[in-house]
Amino acid sequence: MPVEILLPVLFFLVALCYSSVGFGGGSSYLAILGIFLTDFHEIRSTALILNLTVVSVGTIMYMRNRVFDWRAFWPFLVSSIPMAYLGAQLRLTEQVFFMILGSLLLLAGVALIYKFMKTQYEHREFSTSRRLGLGGAIGLFAGVSGIGGGIYLSPILNMLGWKDARKIASLASIFILVNSAAGLTGLLVSGTFSYDPDLLLTLVIGVFGGGLLGSYLSNSKFNTRILGLLTAVLVIYVGLRLILLHSLGIKI
Image (tube, rainbow, N blue to C red; front, side):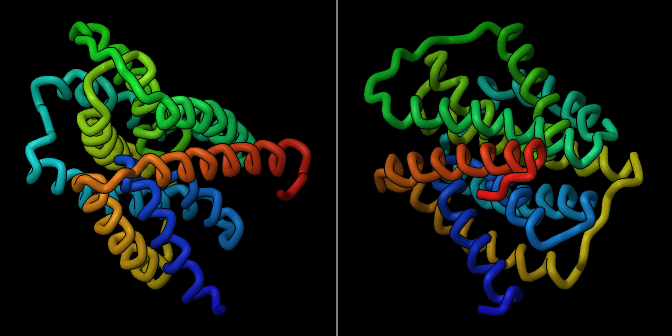
């Protein structure tokens, strides 16, 4: 299959899996683009734009279904935006960037498996200061690693027992949206924003379709547990591959 057809189809499937659990898919976009592109800045910029595309659809659908809760979400968002902006401005070498991303994804993948294997949760409230602290810390990781950060936020909140799974998924979606936008702004300000218009258009179409279907499944009564576990395995594979490739030169 030609690359110009393979990539949109592959990105459609990735967006479907990730959006079904409230994520944008930025980690896998980075890993896949790293195989086909050579410009490191183009890889980061393209992944963030695709992230924005997917979670924009998800956020709208969560709002339409009245899952979004601004009063509960605002501390996470307000503290994360400036930290994501600062994190995106850090000039890291390609090797360091992918090592950081791979390590964070491994941890996130393990946490996701825990999230989707667990059957019972104790829901609790968090203070405003705690939500501000978590949002800022994860926003920084999001900016440094070049993705929206929802993939870090969601499993942490599930393990800590904050709210129900759909509330957390809707928060993850808007969290990725605002922090991807902040990250892109950081790239623009630092002069490292770069993209290929023709490639970007085909990939945006692919992830939009996948994000639309995944968000529909997430907001319906469809059981997304299997998709969630598959997404967790994908995240672990991507993280492990990045670490081995950029530390030891091993391809898996």
